[in-house]
Length: 486
Image (tube, rainbow, N blue to C red; front, side, top):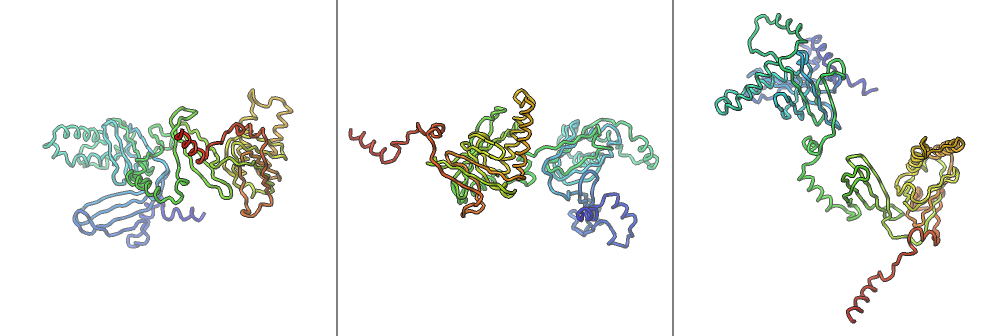
């Protein structure tokens, strides 16, 4: 609330600034809504005055308006800067200029904004910030193009003719005949009456700003038929132009330096493997990293993201040798603090909660490295979205449906820790893990039991047919010697 109250004090609306300016006394400098600073004029090198005003534009954001004027040579300059941060997305505004009233639309151009008028094949590159109207923008374009026209007429007649065609077309739109009207008031009244008259030539103005800090006014509401705005995700090159990403050369040097300075060596490296998306069949990249879990063993985390269709998949694999014994972890959950425990469930581990008769066989959900709350949420989502449905594969019987609803209710209580329950992870390869909150001391709520695998478990894992003989270095060397001797 405090921030909301201070907001209008620093960035009042333009209407409030005008009201304060008209109501304030000229002698009372402290009452003025703007700051005045003496600054050097770059034309005559005399001292001029720079005025700065903090204001907020309706339906837009806070801005800083700056104006410079030199009383010695008459040089003046206006500029506007955004007082907020760079937006997470770029913005593109488009407006159709059909009537003379469209020329009065307010326009804010940041220093990173590109303006395009396709009817004249005219593109204005990023320049200084500007607060003006559409008519003011067109008049500035005419003035800028007229500066070098006498010289172009002598040096390059073709360029002169093409640019003069643009100047004449813009003058038709803004009705600028360069003649002073003695009856200025009558002409202003005539313009007010004819605001809805069509312009001599309809044009389209597009503002493309990667920083999102430009603005083009709409009429009445954002449903204005002549006005359109869309946001887009910036490219890497646009981020570099805004200073949000390092240049390409600097980025390569930083990558080399980081690789050389990594203390962990290969364990800290992220490997990338190109592949094909299983959903859209487009190229993607799978990333893999080796992670060492305290009081456990090394694991491999693999992540697959498709930028085209949004498909995502994460998987955990063991990075150590096959254990000689299996492991059974029993955790008694009594409150919500236990839900924040880290848990690694391998793809060979089964999960069960006896209190609600929940049993997940090995391979269900694959390998997951998350928290206890996270894995219970995933189990609940999988059951509610994929099992309990109204299709042919859903629970059709009324009694079965009621029983399943009761089961989901209990599962929801379990995942919210509303009732105490017991979590059991049974992993024949001992690749699963539950965080010990009392490590390195034993956890009173957790029991870890190592057991010898049965023949059937070894058979299911493919260990009975695995041949590990004659793989040592001594055996290989002896074999080579015997072959050479023979």
